[in-house]
Length: 381
Image 1: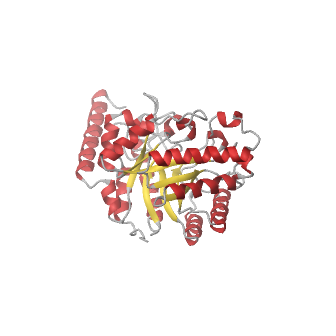
Image 2 (image 1 turned 60 degrees about the vertical axis):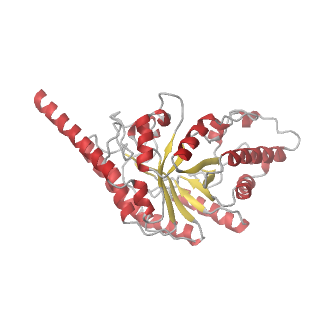
């Protein structure tokens, strides 16, 4: 049995180790500095959501300091998604997105754009199902999409990489998802092609990305096949898509009934990536984190397993010269989307990001740094 004195000593030792780690991280090169050595950028998502929520990381001064120390590029977590930015057909709410864009501009940081269209019926705003599309519904959808893309790109012209389409492939069967817009335009391809072509017109120098969560774990093979068909279709139709955004939510599966932690199929994943780059696409890691839902409660053991898996994954991804920027979907466990869904059986807080809830660096931070140090140089055009 551990005595109270022993418990206090352990706590003090843990805190001292945390302070030492934080000091070392501050003294070491930033993750963005390390990424730049191979021609890439490192960054993170940041959210300007409702105060006091997981998506309100921008309101946290310590989080902003962490962004400044580690990042060279930021991405809005939710602020550019239709249901936040355009809650009604004739009304845009730019304020939250403006705050993040202004912060990035003031500090000389780059911006990624997420996302022009989230092609998933669950995430379209409610008004898109009840909207009066009139006698020519396809034309009205086209008007809405073009108006939306024009408004966003005109306002945020500094964004140099856009997730034009997000999550169009149904992982269950690899088919393209049906949305309120695709139903009225004659199919998903019409909506996606329109969006990419307009984005190229409005932002001719920006990287245009298709973004999805097909993953290297077992069970994602059908999803991967669907994404390959989508990318092949883009090439056949001359759609100006430059890169595949690989969300990279790795580790435990994102489901309440997920089992295991590392179910990766490395060889299969490399074959998938080889096909993607073989079609002439670049790669971007757009939403990296390591879900520890199915790992033991012991924090050192959990952190070690998370770091080891991250290093293996990033080493594989960064072996491709077509691999570009790397963005985490949050830098601190205090503000990660994984805290309030697919809960651990023991209900302990999750530890999927490079810094803990007290903003101390974890082994995951060093795993990312090591992978960046050893990365294959990025191919330049």
